[in-house]
Every structure is written in structure tokens, then in C-alpha cells.
Image (tube, rainbow, N blue to C red; front, top):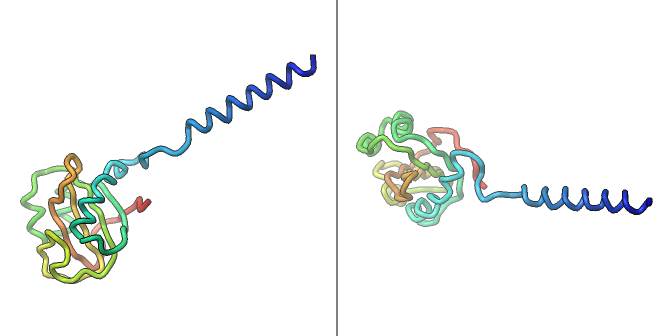
Length: 136
């Protein structure tokens, strides 16, 4: 009779371990920025694969426009949600596709439509206009 309780405990442990395995790593970050990682490849193309990913953020075009007041491109965009990807590197004038500002800087910021991953704007700056998270 002593063997039956041990078998029951063994089965319970096996079930607990297998249930824990099902609750493991997922493909998303569980955040609103998680959906923006499909926007990284078009953003990398805009910077010609130069630089290191500094972060990804989801933000409205109006909020980004308020943070980058000197850029007229954002004022022409419809009110929409953007995936904004920041890269750190050395960016000369004209080295980022779609960046119309005549600045050199250490950050390239590429805005991609959240619904359709197409680059809608790009900027070269020396200081990030907002906080970026989720680099991996």
C-alpha cells in the first residue's frame, strides 16, 4: 500500500512540470510595443543595416510630432499609431533613407506604420526624443 501514495505523488509532480513547460516563453513581449517588432526589418532597411538597435516604442503620430517639433513630415501624417524604432550609431547627413533633416547625429529614429509596416518618416538626432524600451 505504500507504493500507491508514491505513484500519486509522482504523477502530480509530472503534471506540474508539464504544465509549467506550457507556460514558458512566448513570441511577444506582452506589451503594446511587442507588436512593433515586425516593423524592425523595414526600419533596418532605412538605415542600411548600420547601427545597433536602441529600442522600440509604440506612439501616436501626434505625440511624436510634439516631441520632434522641428520636423514638418510628422505634421503631414494622419493621426495614427506608429512603431518607432531607434538605432544608435554614427549617422551622417543623407545616410538614413527618408530623413529630411540636415543633421548628423548618433541616433536614427525610423517611424513605421503600426498597422502596415511601411516607413512613414525618419530622423537623425543626437538625443532620443522619448524613452525607448524592449531591445530584445
